[in-house]
Image (cartoon, rainbow, N blue to C red; front, side, top):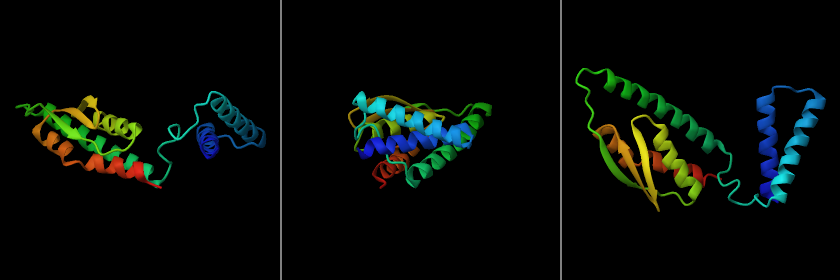
Amino acid sequence: MKHAIRLGVVLYCLWLALSGYYLALLLFLGALSALLATVIALRMEIVDHETYPVRVTWGIVSYWGWLMWQIARSNFDVARIILSPSLPISPKVVRVKASQRTKIGLVTYANSITLTPGTVSIDLDGDTIEVHALTEEVAGEVQAGQMDRRVSGMERAP
């Protein structure tokens, strides 16, 4: 039941953030729509520990901020490589071990790698991710495991 309550609260907060209207009638209708969506999810039996696996905490907000910074930094690095007359690329495929405990954590890690310019997650097999990197330096950063540790930390956040 606690998962259903969390789902309802998250849906209502999302509705509030996206609507921008704070009239009494609209607040009531937003709450009603969040409640209806939660009831439908309960009747479909899709509300369980997997529905809400990563709790919305400051850990997730912190990770998103860090990931946005990594994406911006990598964009500049890739642009510098492309604009360089010698085009200093050295593509490499590496395998990295993922330390996440849940499937959603593994997928979050693999997708975070792909979102970062210069890297693409090619395959996810068990707890190993195959990654294509644009340069040796980028491959080294992926293998260093900072992103893995941050996703694992977010996954374990209270």
